[in-house]
Image (cartoon, rainbow, N blue to C red; front, top):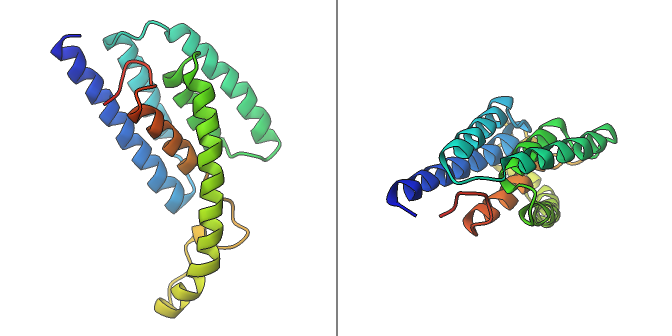
Length: 173
């Protein structure tokens, strides 16, 4: 691999990692995964498919279509939010048809389970401290009981893990 391909791959890896940070912050603070972020991830994939040796782009779109169908089912049942589904669909382009997609789903489930435990523990401990230290400020939604857990965080963590371990098509550190 020549130096220009290496630096291009690193550019995409860094861009993807920054997008995952954006997901975590946005979902934790606002409970929203912006459409602009999903559009950016899609644009990055198209650019990477043109610039990097990503040859299996057609099966990747098949994977994304399958993820969309499954995601729409989960959304219609009220199990996942629309932003989470859109994020899963666009990130499945990057994981493609191969083994990385089942790993992505598995890691997302594990990260989601850990996230739920951490959020529930924080909701038990932090509200009392928050009200003691900042009595005039409202409790952040993340710490309010009976609120949903921002699952985009788990999705971003799982994808970042695949990115760092070199399982994302054409990119890595």
